[in-house]
Length: 219
Image 1 (cartoon, rainbow, N blue to C red):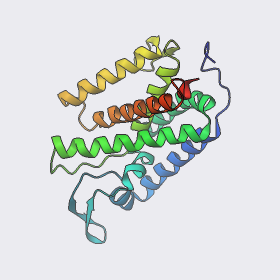
Image 2: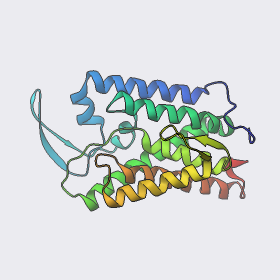
Image 3: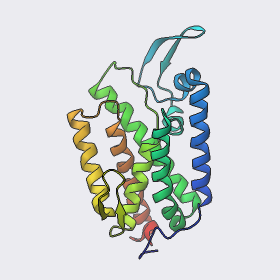
Image 4: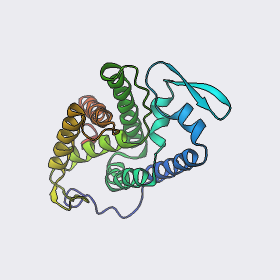
């Protein structure tokens, strides 16, 4: 696996269930958009009135949204690219860590990305009512873990098709997300949430390494 980490032929159980859960979440948002967005998307701090099919209602932050938003996607393309990345990199990590540890790591990254997003909105865009959906924060955490575990693995970008090693892929994505977030480029994308997923993932990996006497889950 160190020589060719992508030589994993099967889909591990936890990756399979995450793919199914995200697919169901996409269908839920597709066919019940109003309640899905109102109650399960990630909203900023506060309570905001909205018009609904039943009249008037309100939206605002609820603690369960830190997890539920990660299983909703606004479009099929959004879902496809997140799930493709999760399958591509996550199946390798689950083979090394096992299903339970991988799931814990993934969910911590999703929640960490959500925490980063709501505080970023509160600090940089107070009063802006912007919902967040998508598993990108979890995916960026998984990508970071892959880069730390297999830094010299060769990967190929889809757009543009450029080959590079995993460590430079992670560094490049992190730098781009920071640049886009600071400059406000690509409005509508939660760049700081992506960075939050990577940061929380890095913190958990370092904690595991410390608990394992320096070896952690990478051994």
